[in-house]
Length: 508
Image (cartoon, rainbow, N blue to C red; front, side, top):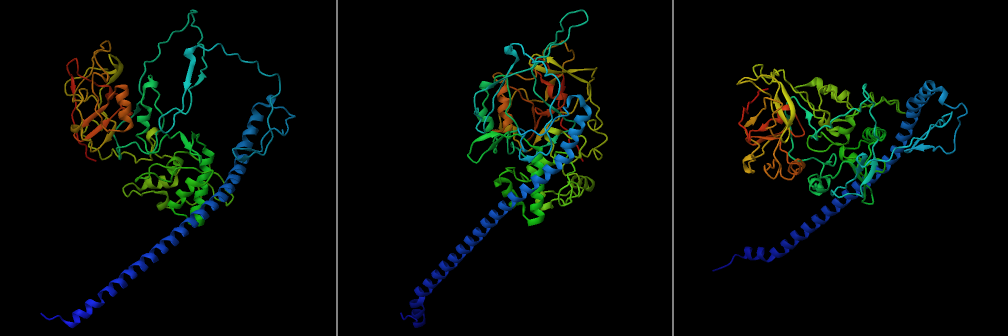
């Protein structure tokens, strides 16, 4: 066998070619690393420049806001006070050295008011009854108390006697859970709890409630807390003035320096005096700093550059996260022109996300639910809490009502333990004197379905022993936080069911 000389020559030079390729790859990799390092240094330098500029601009906006507030809010308030209570204002009132020049970092430019006349008599509170003491406890993100509970005495108002001289007697209302009213279902686009816990539930058995388990269901901890640069948490008190100042600052940063959404989020997080959440949180952008500011009806502030809160250029769509709706341009115009006000008259305030108005116009007129042909339901005390009672004669086939609440999609009810008190047969009492109904059964007797394992609603339901969920295939309606009187329809045990549920699909 003879070998080709050309092949031998190529084989002899192959190691050199391989080494050259490796050296070339190393050089390219080194150049790419250096390029990435340069880009990183440039990014860090721009972030530092943005933060420094934001601090300077924030101070300027604070001074402008303070001047506007002193002239258009505090000065008229002082004039109104003097005109309304002239005898209470001392004419010799002058500037006192004890009055601070600033309050919350904002300068004050007028004198301290003093009240003339004899001092008011000292009000002596009676010895506090233990029933008039309220305990306040603040919790951290881990669900543990930030300190010992603090006692707070409640002011007790004595009711006047009746005409016959007897003392009035009132039965206190039975303990109940809050429920926001709804006229139709609300579709929940997420199956979790969002960023922060809105509050720590206050329950009768406070000491045994699993606070740590409840707080573990939220990614952002407690919404009532802020974390300082030392890592310690402290209560967060909302300041509407600060919110207006921060909004104007980020608006100028965007139009003056062309800061992007990510750059503004970095400024909001790292600049002292801001410490706000990102502009938008989540894929839908229906939470965050901008969403919070949109819930307020802001005053028409006149800034130093001549712009007002209503005439100033609005943040661009890519920054504000506004997604236009082709099927309702009128609502889009309202949202753009009223960015700090919810335009929905029938808004459910606790859950307002500037949601779109429900379009009932295209709902089938043959559907009894759309025509609101519901029977009268009276809520009264039953064996287990509250129950629903018929307020009128109801014949067979009548629609009692529409079971509404928060709708969670793709929740496999069949994969969870089926509870006895979630079924299609229910009981509506015909007589308010009857107490055989049951709002729910104790947790030890009636196992609860875990609709969303690990979310806060399950923690509360399992602890309290309540369950307002209704499974429809892979979807679930939960009327615990919001609903209508049908949420009090009880299970049929130990009686016989006198009504049943029927699923309907409504076309829009």
